[in-house]
Amino acid sequence: MDTVPRVTVPTNRREAAPPLAWYLTDAARAVSEYGMFLAAGPWLPALPRGDGQPVLVLPGLMTADSSTRPLRLVLKHLGYRVHGWGLGRNIGPTARAVHGMRDRLDDLAQRYRRPVSIVGWSLGGIFARELARRTPDSVRQVITLGSPIRLASESQSRAHRFFERYSHLHIEHWQLPLEHGYEPLTMPATSIYSKFDGIVAWRACLDDPSPRSENIAVLGSHLGLGHHPAVVWAVTDRLAEPEGAWRPFRAPALLRHAFPRPDVPAPSRPATGATA
Image (cartoon, rainbow, N blue to C red):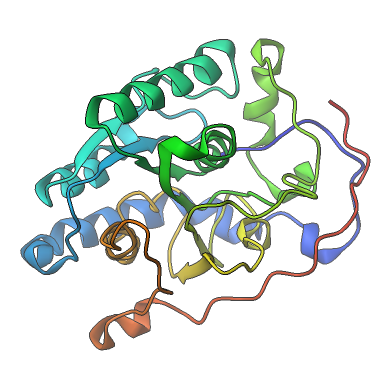
């Protein structure tokens, strides 16, 4: 869960928060999705496998490595050298988080002598993309789960109060819209999102089109994205891509119903008066 500093509240419907019904049922839906995850256990051997690359998994706002444990266990079973961020609860871009993530990435890249793939859930995905821009040689690809990487207003997130509660500890204060005017990432980038996300507006999760970026839609909650079976399949499929190669995601025939056709993001707009 995530957001950024206050901005002028817009009236455009594209900048509205997720429907209240999705917000109120998000946690319950996440629990049912965890049941689906457990039931899908026998299918684990069928998941796409890659080359055992190092993978760093970053948690969302107000969560810690325990939230990403199911996904990390799957990746470990598939042979990846997977790691949590090891920085406790994610309360935003504090000095500990900003410097700790950079040190963590540098350590993994040096230890394995190869670039690291980063999977970031919600706010963790925003962090992942920042890391990729600052240290591109250390990052193989970036996968975000329900991350509002194009957040234009705090009204697009129902978690902004949690973020602002710790803003006095933050050493970075981001301008809105996020990533406005930025060039596409130089490495493959995948944004996994859901139109039924109860925490962040799904349109804010859409990455701009580029030769090596894509958006993958799933049918799920925000709080369940870390263990939703469709998300797990998509993440493992992307990680299985050979280093230096990239092709768009294609769901297997038996799972196509789990992946709605992704949306094309609206053109980027000018900033809306954010304050740092």
